[in-house]
Every structure is written in structure tokens, then in C-alpha cells.
Length: 148
Image (cartoon, rainbow, N blue to C red):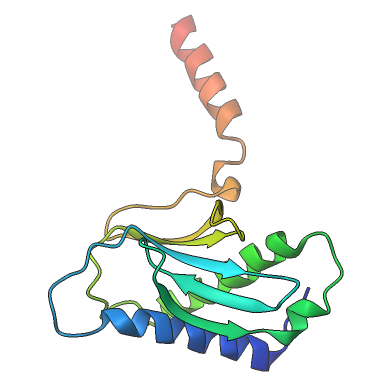
């Protein structure tokens, strides 16, 4: 699935609206996760905090016409890229949320599908690409160590 630029802009604006609730000059807020919920059949996009309080919502009409079985895989890719771009543009720098916290994709039952972005000062979110071949390297290292 490839979303149009207006739909991507609407997603970004909705995320900015949600995180805008955490840019006041007040005390730091403790939030573990910000939940992004996408519904293929209705096109609804909701953003919730840890207490299931709605922070923002929008309707993405392109989702309603998508017929594929890989909706959530596409949402994971699209939203992850969007959030990474927003992070690189420093959109999350002025938030009053204590780190670490995550943006997570959830289904209609609010069950986590994927962690999209972890924001922390000193933690790296490891993905499959980074771990490729690690088992073989560790096995070779251990074999070499045991032989000596």
C-alpha cells in the first residue's frame, strides 16, 4: 500500500496534534506508550495515551478501499517511517514526557502489534536488520573461545 501525500500529511498532523498535548511548560508527564490505532474498514486513525484517553483522531479514506491482507504490516512500515522522519525533524524534542516512551501500533482490541519508535536518550531499539547474522557470529565466537 502506498498512501497519497495528503493522507501522509493528515497522519503527521494527527500525530502532531496528539503530542501537542505534551508540549506545555508544565511538569514532565509519565507516559509509557502512545498507542496508534488504525482501522482498515472504517478508515479511522486514533491516538491514545496509556489510560486509553483519546489524544487525536482522523479518517484516512484510502484505508477503506484497501483490499489487501497485509494492512497492519503496511501500517507498521508507513507509521514507523513517518515517526522516524518526525524524530529526525526534532518534532519530539520539546515534549514534556519522561523518557523512555514508545509509539506502538495497536489493533482494535488495543493489543500491541508493533513497537514503531522508542524515544530514549541512551537506548537503541534493535530491529531484525541489525540482528541479521548475530547468531552465527556468536556461535563462531563461542566455538573459538572454547577451543582455546
